[in-house]
Image 1 (cartoon, rainbow, N blue to C red):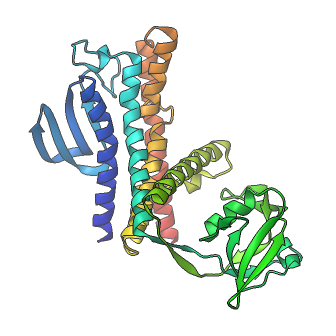
Image 2 (image 1 turned 90 degrees about the vertical axis):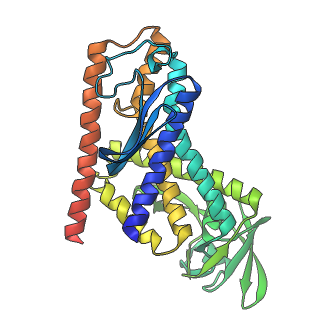
Image 3 (image 1 turned 30 degrees about the vertical axis):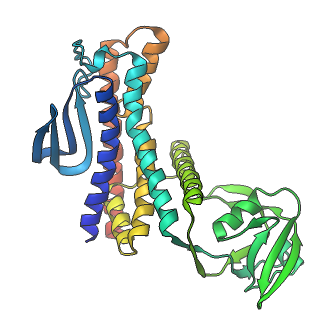
Amino acid sequence: MGTITFLLVLSVLVFIHEFGHFIVARFLGVKVYVFSIGFGPKLFTKEFMGTQWSLSLLPLGGYVKMKGQEDLDPTKASYDKDSYNVLSPFQRILILLAGPFANFILAFILYIFIGLIGFQSLGTTIGGVQKDSPAFLAGVKKGDRIIQINNTKIQDWNILGKVITTSDGNLDFLIIRNGRKIALNIKPKLTNTKNIFRENIKKKMIGIAPAPVFVDIQYNLFQSISFGYDKTLEASKMIFQGIQKMIQGVVPSSEVGGVISIGKVISDASQNGIVAVFFIAALISVNLGVLNLLPIPALDGGHIMFNLYEMITKRKPNNKVLMQLTIIGWVILLGLMGLGLYNDINRFFKG
């Protein structure tokens, strides 16, 4: 069941990405020869509206083959009226952006569904209070449950953390203790801690830890839209930061995961219900959108870079340079895929 879920989720994410390219290309009058989910030998193919729709053996991506665009040889060009090459650089960029944008939209929609369906989140019951911390000095005790800070109702630990870290000055806490409401005034303290990348940072904290108590969260439509926007933005920032930290060497290359890791995460999520699958699918969709925007010639971001060059300089990139950069891009991309697969296999045998 986990494998089927993995293949289904990956196929949907790839389809949405490629459909973004396809729909904008067709809108701009570009002929699309092939729309393929997967690579390699074709398992299924059907001609429809002038495009060959295919499902291929290796479900590790997909592609839209447009007239005039050759990823393996970008020097080949067609100047027919229905060709990608006759479009302005701006129009080509719109086609290239459409794939990643479709992934962001899909994630946004999935998060909205999650908000409407409801999900479990870590509650605001306190499992521990650090000695001599702001919370300790204010009288906070283990087992207390925070329900409000200033005028903000606190539903889960995530919201609690955001309110505290973005606070300015003292905060008015409303706490439930043994069925009674207690008001406490606490001033967060700038404290040394570590972020998700294990870097030393300073962060406003009050010195509390959560108890393993979960709560059910469910939003109405407008709240779900806000939740979807916030989560999509949050996931995008996290992935961009992760790539930046990896380039800087903060995150070791051993942390790079491949298709096996993705499959395991999706398979594990499938054991916990549809909401867990939606959460993982949304995060992977954002990941796919962000990674495709990287300025690597084999990816959408690389093609965008070439078109931006043409917009700025008013001339096309040199064909020889274009070819060399494309080859380098494929080497980088295949190298990253190989690294991810190596790390996956390494973890599998160590695990």
